[in-house]
Image (cartoon, rainbow, N blue to C red; front, side):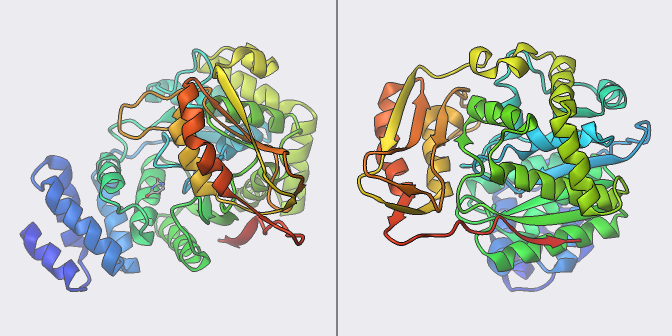
Length: 435
Ligand code: URA
């Protein structure tokens, strides 16, 4: 077999065989296939698309190339959660402790910020002392003891996805349904979870921009899970405006802590309850979604969820004072500026992609691998789509340790907000649930 012949077949729109996919994946990880040939394959996959059979064989090839984590030493119902990535997406921070508080075992391997979207690991690391690295024995022990661990992915788990993802990030080949489905499911299956809930984000702030593509992706995720004997629920949610009211690491941890105590933004809590209740039913933790939501709400109001978060922070070396007094103990940026609207009107749009981009400029994300994150940097959104605002009202607040950057992003944030003179309904938050 020769890589160049496989590339030519994909370029011409032919379907690649499982052996050809395996040849590409194994060759790339071992260094026999260079970056430029893998990049050519990725671009051909984006332009031509991957068939369902190709998506499946690519997933299988990545799993076969990886160590598969054995979680059988964890007692109980194991749940994993993944998001395709969004702006202000702090759902894992809230939903992880929620599920652990109702008795699930949450074994979560998370990622870092990608493009304009944030990453759970960067958010957790804004908590002084919090470590996202641990060996497999400690990971399993912690989950058995407190029901939850959130760690970074090690090299032994899906190295192929790590390497391919890094290349996709710099070759404009992230937004491809087949590549996203195989990337997510290879990691989830290799990291051992039996029950997986996936938040498929669609809209301006997501990699997937249309509902049709989101449905296609959700169906492929569920189908791949079924082939590997895992229970998967995919929930398609709106990412046309940022989720909740904060974008940026410290700011999102603060909002997540509020949500775990029941004071969170309504949209954030709705996404958590929808994802949580559906996977609880699928995994046998509840009979129906009504019962599941009741259990989740009770866990929040009784204080069990915030206590679970405190245990998580403590177990992973973080400063537990953060849980009681986040606004006094988390690192904040020195410079803060209000962004006001110029006229009266109803907010009809908050472009999530532009807000994500602005937050990244302020220091909340990276422009290249290895860039240092400013944990306090980010944006607070004080008004959301559908709200009526008067000229001069502050609709957002920018935070950074570099005063010059506040001036740089001002027009980007202003332009992200659109106003109309007629009332504008806020868009649906949950579009569909695919099982
Ligand atoms: N998240 C992933 O893990 N992989 C993708 O390809 C996109 C989002």
